[in-house]
Length: 405
Image 1 (cartoon, rainbow, N blue to C red):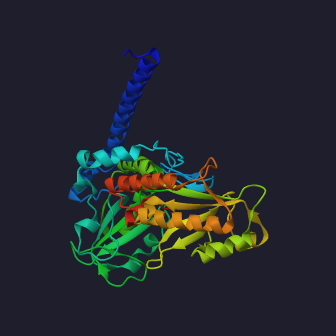
Image 2 (tube, rainbow, N blue to C red):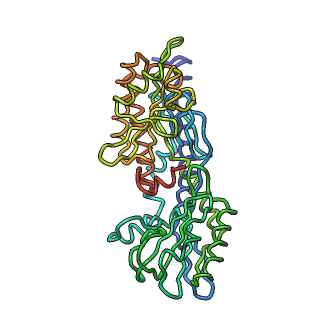
């Protein structure tokens, strides 16, 4: 039986489509692999030799970006428009449940363990399992080490403890050489033989700039003689490069998922009604203009409920106005168990939609059925796996720092 020209054409088109997908995935693979290699290369490779035999402590920084109009993913978004902060390089995409266009993290998952050295992500926390409490993270913080001439109390660092550098600044001290680090505050007791000033290299406001890092190193250099203390500093240019590389990597795996509840015009949801339903569902109104759902055991925020109109919720606005919809948002990097949190958020969204008489829809205002929600759940899994492959465990202190404002 001979094939018609239409059948032959369809076969050729199918072959070309498959070939195109293979070429595209190969390109994406190489791009992501380079980012991982650059951002999480061995810290020794990025550390210049200290002058006069002084030890030099390396670090890495990153940066995040401006508010993006839309529920984003440094990768995936589902829902009606709302303002969500993300890395500037974050690729904003949407899905209705059957869209698998968000591909970069898949390459991360497939190749991170093959093409990167796990030892490159070593941090003080993993190197000192017996340590209790926060530890410096040399992969995401620029570290300056000070070795005072004699043991010092935290009070001697008053000026440094309260310095403002544009990024989170943490101070640590060791009571003896090689002992676990202790996070320092002005009233921390004890005396310390070694100090570490740690500047976060990135957050969702952007990568630490060359000027910020240069100022950080200069301030520490001015502080050292006052203690007095020997000083070990990293190379500012190398640190700047690592910050930008890490920020680009974070942009590829920054995912926020939104489920929209919409009331068809001209109907609307009175603010007082919305507040009552939200609080009955376990949400609490937060100062940032949104409702937050805290985990009962830990108090950690699992997901939020925001106004679809990009207008903040306050006690006054809820009392005096109405809205035609809300968006439940899951910030994947900041949640310890993203899949469980998504399942909870999905159930909450269905119940709230039913109570308010609204529809659960995607960005195009098409209903989200169970099949679409299952596909979205798979995207959450891909995003969580991508973060883990990049050695940024969802909900971990590292993730909280990198994906915080």
